[in-house]
Image 1 (cartoon, rainbow, N blue to C red):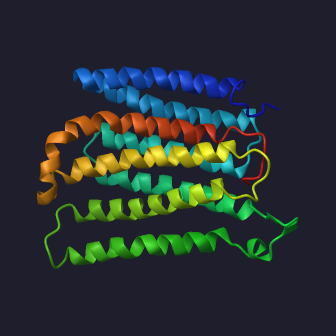
Image 2 (image 1 turned 120 degrees about the horizontal axis):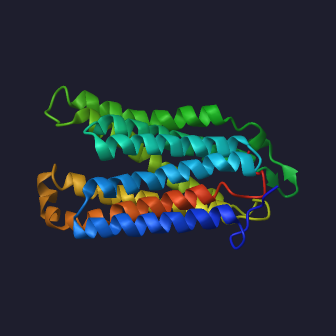
Length: 263
């Protein structure tokens, strides 16, 4: 069976090389402001590439539930990017990204559940840990502010209220996932090789930076007191996809591991 090794693993090296070529290509097109359709196609190709690699892990490694969830997160990310890059269906794109974060939530909670070795014995608290209950609580926390925003839109004028509500649901989930990912990546009870988890946490962080830049870019055109930033958004856009693709590649690589302690 193929094992994870950052120096010798061919899958990881091929992914890194191909992703780097795509990143350099679409960034060059964006800087020169030419061939936008080609640039967007290359961007989407990078995410599709990540999806294909996560799917290949099911054959090269043990096809455990963690890798299946990782693959699904990449599939929904690619589907969401189709709508955000090539259509005006931004609401649908954001909703699909909500599913991406749901899969990451499942993955992180599963990792949390699998950390069971404490002082040489299994903790009772982890035996009683139910992922579905944690998911319900997390989604409830995300749903309340989003529902409040929709309710407020009936009394005051809020442009694109459904889009902002979906983005709020997504953003809260992302922040909580990011915090949780870094927490589990530093848990001293994890078994031997923690590198894949650290790649995952820093990949999520790079992906998060992309979303922060995207939010600033979009809000500068929607919120009056942020309009001062609009002059700089053309420069911010150049960094969106590099951060995003780097994050997705790191998240993908986290699925290449020799241990099965995520499942």
